[in-house]
Each structure stands twice: as structure tokens, then as C-alpha cells.
Length: 300
Image 1 (cartoon, rainbow, N blue to C red):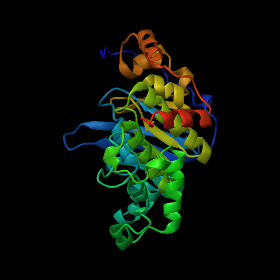
Image 2 (image 1 turned 30 degrees about the horizontal axis):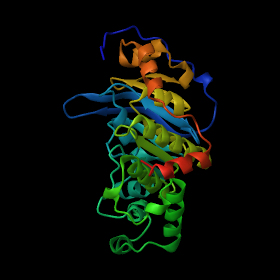
Image 3 (image 1 turned 180 degrees about the vertical axis):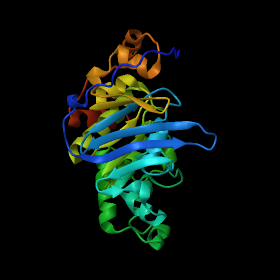
């Protein structure tokens, strides 16, 4: 997209969002690489329980870096990340391993062990809780196995527990990734481009599933997503990054053409929305109806 500089409008008033105590609190987060490039420039964000946040911006804006700094897969240079009362940025390696149990991660490329079964991949979400010998021998407690079966049923894969991961479609693999993250009993979900490799219909199904699960569990989530229309349709709040800076923070209905231009630069946003609407070939369904259709389609 063209990146013609534009004058920055004032940030939308946070009063437009409900005042709820923050579960995740990010303050002045900065990431500077050895090259001197700044991927993040003093980002500050608070996310309350149950809120699903869409993180948008052009390539190189710092979206994946922000997601990974929260659980310290990337080490921030400055600033703090608090999960409840826990300062994640100050933890030792040992304590960080325990803290990561509280943060579920869903990856763009699924990050499954393809030679293992669906069930074994879901149970890998318990690795932070069980002794090494149990994980090495794949001997997980019965309650963990029972929970994994329940989660596979919830994401529509109950009949696929014994299949190898490499036998699944892209949409099915992403559902395994969701179940694995939930097996951790997380307090926060970090989701990195969950629909980047999926077709438009499957993308909407996956986003709907994530939103439903977050509502059921009062689970907050930050979703790094490149599809602006999906972000508007399936998240409650949108953060816009540009060149490492937070330039938009507000509800989806405030993401107008002016805000999109501030985030991405000049573009025909009306045409973009029209193309996106042409890709939507399904109406919203009730849970039971959707589950039936997805099973008939092989959950692809």
C-alpha cells in the first residue's frame, strides 16, 4: 500500500470503552534490535478480562513483536508487562516458565508436531504442569486426558483424536492449536495471525470459534490479524500499530477511513470493504447448526 505521510489525528477517547480493571497491563513497551531498529516505541495498553482485542497494522509495524514481548518469546528492551499482579518482564527464566502456563499462544503456522496424533498435540499444552518423565513417556494424568477430549469436542474435532496432525486440513490444524492453548487453562490468549493461511469461509469460522470460547470463559485475547474486516466483525476493540507506535485504540465502529489511512496509508477503503463482503458466503449460525455443517464439510 502507498505510505504517503499524513497528519496524525488525536487518539480516540478511551472513554468509548468500558472501564474495567485491567488483567493485562503493558506500559511503555519498547523493543530495539541490535541493528538500532525500533520495532516498538513506548506502547502502553490495558486489556480487561473477557475482552477480545484485534491488533492490526501494515507488515513491519511491530504486531508480532508486541505479541511475543508479552510472553517474552522476544525480550523487550524497556517497559513492563503485568499479568494481574505478576510483572512478567522481571521474572527469572525458571519463574517465566511457570508464568507462561497462564498465557496460551495460538500460532499462524499452527506449531503442531505433525507425526504425533491430534490428542498428543493437545496434551502438549500440559507440558508446563507435568514432570519431565511423564511428558517424555507421554503419560499424562487422567484428568488432563479427559479435559483434552472435552476440548476436542468443543472445537469440533472429537472424532479426530487419533489422527496424525499431518492428516488434517489447515482449518482443523488451527482448531487443534486452539484446543492445545486451552489445555493450559490460560488467563490470557495471544493469537498470531490465525487466519493467514486459511480461505475466507474457514477464517470466519475460526474467528467465530475464538470469540465464542473467550465469551464462555471470560478469557481476554489479543489477536494479531491482517484482515481488517475480520477484526471489525469479530473483536470488541482494535489496536492499530504503525512503525512500532500505537496510533489507534478504540471500538471497531470507530475504525473509519481516516483511522485506516493513519494506520496503513492512503487506500480505497470503500473498495476494500466491498471486496471483503463479496467473500462472505455464509450467514451467522447458531452453535448447533454451525457444528453440524462443519462436521458434514469435514471441518475444512
